[in-house]
Structures are given as C-alpha cells and as structure tokens.
Image 1 (cartoon, helix red, strand yellow):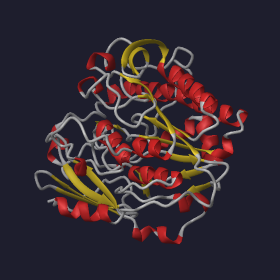
Image 2 (cartoon, rainbow, N blue to C red):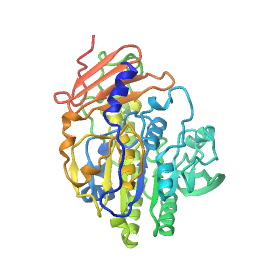
Image 3 (cartoon, helix red, strand yellow):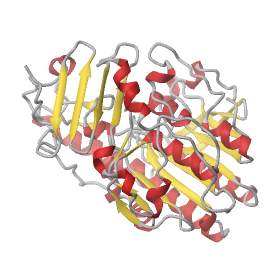
Image 4 (cartoon, helix red, strand yellow):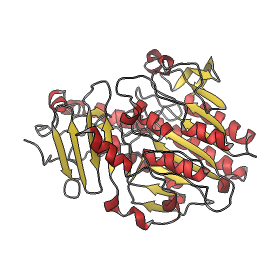
Amino acid sequence: MERGFVSFVALLHLCSHGPPPGDAAPPNIIVIMTDDQRWDSIEFLPSLRQLAEEGVDFQQSFVTTPVCYLSRASFLTGRLASDLGLENTTQFDTSGTIAVRLQERGYVTAHFGKYLNDYWKRGAPAVPPGWDEWRVFRDRFGDTFGLDSLYKNTILSWNGKFVYQGGYSTDFLTDFTLEFIEEHASQPFFVYLSYYAAHVPLKPDERHLGTLAGVAPERPPSHGKRDRSDKPRFLREVVDHSTPEGLQTSWDLAWQLYLETLLAVDENVGRIVDRLRALDLDRKTVVIFTSDNGFSMGEHGWLGKGVPYEESIRVPLIVWAPGFAEPRAAQEMVMNLDVTATIADLAGVEMETDGRSFVPLLKSRAESWRWWTRVIPIDYIWYGLHNYRGFRTRSFKAVTWEDGFVETYDLRRDPYELENRSAP
C-alpha cells in the first residue's frame, strides 16, 4: 500500500481548533495512559468501570500504530508515526508537542512516568520543551528487565537529574500527581500520567499478588488457531505462542498477573478522582484514560503487540468530565490521534493534527460521526520489522504488508479475523 494512500486517509482527519466551548475558562486536563492494556480488561477493574459509567466510554477506540514508542510519539504530536519519520530514527521533533502548545496557552504542565522506550538513549536526563515538571523513567534495558523492572525501585529523570525513587511506581507516580494537582489547583494544569502497567515483566504489588487467582482469560476462536496459512509470512513462521496445550496453565497465570498489575492502576485512578472531588475540581477537569496499545494473548498464535489485529490496535478510552461530558457508552469510532486533537480543542489552542476533535461526542451523538464517514489508518513502519499499512472502517479492514501480502476482513461477519478474504 502506497504512502500516499495513508496520507490521504490522514487528511480526512486534519483539523484546526477554536476556543473552548462557550466563554468558560479552559479546563484542567489529566491524561492517564497505561502500557499494553487491552480494551476488554476494564470489566475486572471497579474504579475504571465506575469512571466509564460516569463518563463517556468510547467502546470503539483504536491506536494507529500498536507499539509503545511510536504510539506515544503520535499522541504527543497528534501525527501518524510515518509522518514523523520514525521508521529509521530514534527521535522526533518535540518543539510542537501538545505540551508545548498547552504551556503557551498558560497551562502548567507535568509528565510523570513513562516517556519513550530507551529514553536513556534519546537524550536522558534532558527535559524536552513544554514541561514544567518532569519525573519520568530513565528506561534503560536493564531497568525494564531487571529485578524490579519499572514497577518498583527505579531511576527517574527528575527535572533533568537522575534520581533513585523507591516504592511501587504506580503508587508514587500517583503521589506526584496528587501533589501537583494540589499545588496548582488555582490555575489551568495539564498532567500526563503514564503508568508502566501492564507491560512485561508482569510484577503486581504484593498487596494484589494472588488476588485474582483462577480468573482465566476468555479465548476467542482466533486463540490457538493452528492453521495460519492465510496470515503473513512472519506469523506463519513463528512458534505458535498459544500452544501446546500443556502451556495453558502458564497462559492463565500470565492473564492473572496482567490484571493484578492493573489493580494498582485502578486503585490510584480512584485516588485521583476522589482528590479532584475533595478539591472541588471535578467539574473543572477533564480526565482521559487510555492505553498506548493493546496486547495479543495468543490470538492468531501471537504474543505481544505490533500486529494489525483487534487485540493489538484496540484500547480503552474513557473521558470523565462531570462539568462537561454527558455519560454514555459511545459506539463512534475514534483513535489516539483524536485524543490529541480533542485536548487542543478543549484548551483552545491551534495545533494541526492527523486527528479529529471528538468534543461534540462528549455532549451527544454527533451526526457528522456517522460510521461510514470514519476511516482509521493503521500504520506500522519501523526498522523493517514486519512493516505494514492499512485502514479500518466500522465493517472492513485492509492491510498490505511490506512483502506485498494483503489481508482483508469483513468485520461484520468475521469479527475475530479468521478468514483473510485476500489470501492466495
């Protein structure tokens, strides 16, 4: 699939942004982003279920590039990863990120948690422009896969200096956030709170370890599908991660640990909401909860992300804004680039993005968001690792891989992507 086609798809979503609704002061904005969280994990997390019931729960939310670094760069800039030139580089232009635009607007800004993979090779401990407060993981390979990983007792870049921070990271990152909110309650603030859960290696806090024992994952028809002749070459050749059946107990344990890392996230999201209410900031604040990408748990024989299937590209997205949003379960299709566009729209800043503000959807169903008008680009171009480009609509998905292999799926009749209609 040619680059020009995807760029054309992206142009469908370009937008400029005007002032915030009415004459109200711009709202405080908190983005809470998890790592590798599937959309179907919310049912196990009570605080997030409540957040979804009280806010707008976007049940058809997708990322355009389902891998951590590229997805996060896209969120910060509002641009497709391929448009950022990231396929063979380790850095992108940070001079025009959403943080820079909000800071120019008068927001005080903070980033706590995960910035980008291998930040230590991307300028650490230097602080990119746009951030007033900066406490992010150093994120060396040894940090990520060491004894405690980034879950516990790690090194932060704290406003440009390396600092050791003890404790469970989901908890202390939330502590930072609560302190920041209280300190800046009288002025517009923007917080980007980026937890490490539920990334591997899975390390729940001791208080949650074992609490979900016996909770087995649902296994859709695509799980353990042995015949992968209609899938791309690299998937036909890799070991089927969902077999043999003797490993199924390990799969169940992985799902349990995965959810248990998210229990700390769930508790801490509840802490943030409670503090906003206690400070009388709940009706002045927009909280956006989402993830950088999903995660395949054996569907089509694959473990991880980086593939164009639903488990990898579909993510939770909840917008909680009691002073503005009307609670509902939204079925309109949205993507991560829309989150950036929406933040700019809410704040009343000018920012060209490849997304589209969904502010109208926070009030009601918008007629302009009919399902047949939305095309979600799928864009994975990075270091020659099984690259592909494609798109998803409400009922159809098409992907062209680097070697020319094509996948198409009728999602109405085949939601589990079992039958590639373009297979040779």
